[in-house]
Length: 143
Length: 143
Image 1 (cartoon, chains in turn cyan, brown):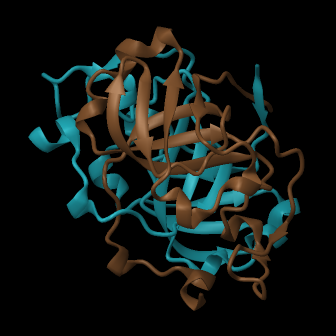
Image 2 (cartoon, one colour):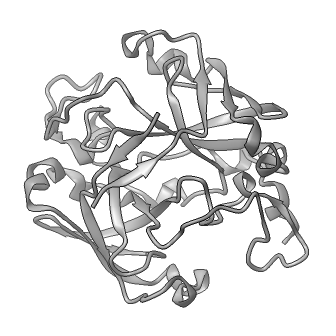
C-alpha cells in the first residue's frame, strides 16, 4: 500500500539547509507558511488561534537510520522512533509555531525550525495538550 | 510534486468505523499500534516516554471540504484548517496517546481515536508542549 500526498504549500524561512537550523535560535525564528490560493477559505478562523501545528515533508531526506544520537546528547543512542530525528521511514516533520498574523493564504509565524522551500502537508490548529506534569520524557530527562 | 509514504504499521482498536469514535469515550479507549517487524530496533527507548504521538493516514477519506462544522458546535462553520476535520487535502491524523507498554513492535496505548486497521505513517515521542496558559483556541473557547 502506498500513501500519496500533494503539498498544500511551502515554508519560507531564513534557513537554507538543515545544518543552519539550531533549535536554540529557532524559537525566535520568524517565517511564513504560504498555502496555495485554492485553500484560502479553508484558513478562515485559524487567525483566532495563537499557535498552529505544521506538518511538513522533509524532502532532502532519502534514507532512514534505525537508531539516532540526538543533538546535545552525544553519548545517547536510542531507536529512531524514540527521537524526532529527520531520518525516518516517512520523513514527516511536525512543529508547533506561534501564529503572528494571517494574510490571505500566508501565515506569518514564529518558532520555525524548517528549511526554506520545505513542502507543507497539513496545517492544524493547536488545540491544547496533556498536562506536562503528568508526562515523562525518557532520555530527554537526563540532558 | 508528489509525496509518497509507505505505512510503517497499523492501528488495532475497538472502532470499526469513524462513526463509532466518540471523543468522550476515546480518552479511555485502549488499543495497539503494531509496527512492522523491521522497525523493532527503532523503538528502543520509546517505552521510557509516557506518551507518544501517532501520525496516521485516514484511508477512508477521499475528498476534502473547505469548511467544517466541528462536533458539539453545530452553529459554527470555519475553514477546514482551523479544525481537525478528517476531510483534508492530505488526510493525515495526529493523535497523542498514553503509552502503557511496549512489547517488541507492539505499542499498547490508551486514548485512541482511530479506527481499526488505519495505516500508521509515523510515531514520535511526546516531548512536551507550550504552556496552554499562553495559548488561545479560537472557536473552541466558545464551546
